[in-house]
Image (cartoon, rainbow, N blue to C red; front, top):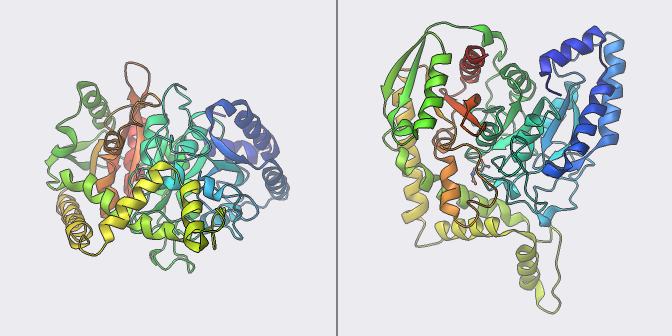
Length: 471
Ligand code: GLN
């Protein structure tokens, strides 16, 4: 379905379509696109029950708001009671969570119809969706290319027109970069804006759940449903959620910062996409700004995120969590080794090794300590920049979608895909990717808009201007 969530919501209320029909369309589209590897698990029974309930409620005049009766897809690192949550890992291939993540519960309360769990890079580590134990996801725009990662299945589900909305998670770019490569909208909220209760942890000082949608208004409505304080997550901000839809039509003059570190090395074609985005923003003043510590961001991120991953993933030991492998006769350590060697893929093992090393005695100050210092400097760059501008603008990724297999042999090349998304993650800031035209091969570019902490409404409003300006 190419209709937006708000168009579908209007049709549901007008009685021109039912949630059951939308649900069948989404399930059929998912089956029809099975070659793209988008879903790990579909939930036809659960989806049909939710759709039937939504239809009954709407017919009875009960209105749960803009997501009522709308089909949605969930990244497979969000816990769903009764439906497996694999994190695209062999280790969790049969794991069924005993509870729903807070965001999943809130979507159920909002009447959304979850049709299934989307493919991803294993434990959200990757930028191409090629690190999945269930096989790669292919980009619906060109199946020979990656959809980006790690929320590649969620972005592809929206880009393929299976659902208008999906949830992803973003640690260093995993909502925004796949949204950019698939030509859809993806928002990473401020750290703490959305509950992580029931999101399987990767890098806890960075992880956020974020909306992916086929238009900005859909992303705003989805954020509205999931944002706000949660007594089950002590790291969730106590600030009440803002009103994310109210300002979407705004066009007041805007001061836009263009960080020179984000534009200096853009290709001519990339620069043209960025310029098209600036033009689409309308009434703006472009200010040249500098974020001088940008060059440290990738190294900082891969030390901190890997360090946090190495501790977060220690729970997958074959005792409390994970499919146990018993080699026989080698005792407890042998069981741990066999379970983790069999269960984790190569990239996850690489991160665990890197992170364990960075935290080890004798190296802690040299790596983890230094990375913390660099992170503070990067955060400081943003604080200084936002003293003068309303939003910062760049591209979401340095390239459009690349061919499958083209970066798998070189982890550093893969890590560079996140060069523009990682700084805002380290600073905990809200940032959105909105489509801004295509390259010569018809592959989408994403414009990246970053705002100050908790300014989700502002980045959504700026993204809506771009969407309108290009329409
Ligand atoms: N691509 C980055 C990584 O591999 C970011 C992943 C994410 O945001 N989950 O860590």
